[in-house]
Image (cartoon, rainbow, N blue to C red; front, side):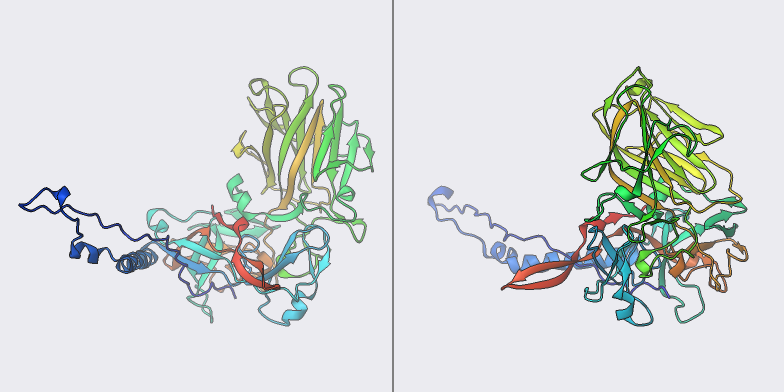
Length: 525
């Protein structure tokens, strides 16, 4: 089951108070001027500026304001389970992977042996096995929920919502948090992990993609032994615009410097260099397709799990050298979903003469935009998504050309090499590279609505799903899948108390305590 905790009051922190200063007033009489007489403070003024009294007044005001805000506007909620992981964490344990240093976060089980559950968990970054048996328990994330937002507007697709469980079981009426995917009057089905609305695939924008992705690979956390060389294949001499496999391929290693990829094709304007990411298991020494798997559940990655198809890349790109005429040098990144491959190509040089374009392999251009370029010496944040059969390219947080929508695929093969990066006529350094997959909504034996039978929503009814699809009680499973609008409590807008373990040495002994995890404190879209 997936209720949220009983709402808990947020901790109040009072700013330090200073005792008010009593102003001295001159007192005059018939014998002289105010300056000639001793100055006295009126008793009433001294009594009204007592520090203790001022503190009580301020505390009362803060408590009163908090209660009013909680009643009519904002309310905190706790998250006990991992149905929305990794976006939201429930009660869990975490620890650093001993091989790559990545933080492995695993939810506490609701049934079975806790020791066995944490005995062997898997790092989602390097597939290393580790134990969290000796780790301390951590509480779930705490959310601030806007209770009035749906009085001002209607709920929107892909946003998180807090509502009272409509399912007529022991959880009836308890607060739940899920992601809203179906709106009133729609017919919802789930096909190959994607949501379809009235027979059309429901596509996300870049803001929604950022909220729903799950990690596959983070180049910032490097294994101590082998490094990341086994996960990259170098292609030299081939044109990055040619189809996959067209051009000589080397099994050598790319230039990796301080967790960065260096693509040096600055010898001549026609020089090209590219690297391809492969999902290489460092222990098995084999290449496997990317699977739908969430390390938060504590299970090991298995080859019988569904294949992942929708991918999202984020990285920092810097051109350090370029040769040739204006418009000849370029940087490109390519994503494959098992049915199609889409390349985002961006020219290097002056912005006014630059161009960005999306190219579908074996089909041609999907769209282009002028006035977009990577200027040498500058660093850019690049985002590229091929999710829900939609390709989106963003530079420094701005979508630079309209998203390109492809028709739904009738068949998608498993993907073990989803990403390729290339350069032509320039030297490019790629830093902070992270690869993610999109949510894949799974179908299980007890999933009835949307996966086996379409869910038809009436007026003021909504369909909700958990991000951690394999471990979520949601509209797929309930006898009546619809959540009525009257059950909504509000929209969470801030993770305000994510927790981590803190350590401090006192008297030669280490003390462990729960503290705020500033890295996960964030606004929710």
